[in-house]
Image 1 (cartoon, helix red, strand yellow):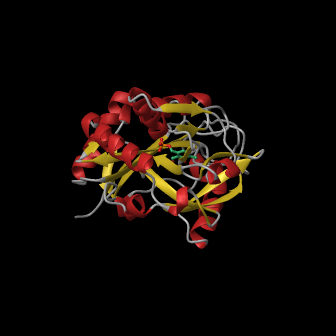
Image 2 (cartoon, rainbow, N blue to C red; image 1 turned 90 degrees about the vertical axis):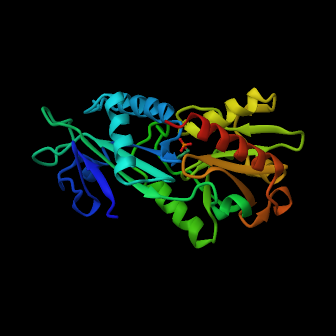
Length: 285
Ligand code: PLP
């Protein structure tokens, strides 16, 4: 079966899915994206992703070309047309293609909206069972990381460095504390069983999975503290883990080659992963 993409109102074969070289997403990274998981052919926690999309576009004064209701309809149709059971749906909206390359917002230009899907077995991901290593890198990003901008060069470099080190993620560090992963939120479990993840602010992306995991943990009377933590605190922790739409909850077993939690997958990360999978299945649309 040939993969189908969505481009500005049309469902087309992925190989024919194209936008202009004058598109401002291409020229200026003037765009916003979202990634939602698909499980059992349904979208996971999509209301949360659409709410963040609306907030992100609002922060850069980019009007959505479709309503959120219509966007969800298109998402569902794309999943169905691809017969996707498990994987990811990528969505991007940009300020469109002008007649040239002018920094100032164009007038009368329709924003670009594209989507595509990729198959991925999120539930049986080997990293979830074995855990991943992370490296730490300086956080060299701009100051509005709460906006899910397509300007991801710092994360590309960070994740490339992680891959070259045989690791699954890079934790970005600023002012002596971890901000977040290259494409995930960072968590630790302290020796006295407190789940710690950095508080939301302009310094990090408000992760949808992070939000759900914090709420699910609190519902179960687990102790959660939203505050920054250092790499030293993470190394001394009982466990570490990451969350994201594409990984759900994944244990971290080494940081810069040093074991965390004895270098073994922790019970809390395993439990939160199971809880999140149940939530994802129960609430997917
Ligand atoms: N932080 C960053 C920088 C990300 O890019 C992502 C996901 O791509 C996340 C956190 C996790 O967010 P979510 O759980 O919404 O996927």
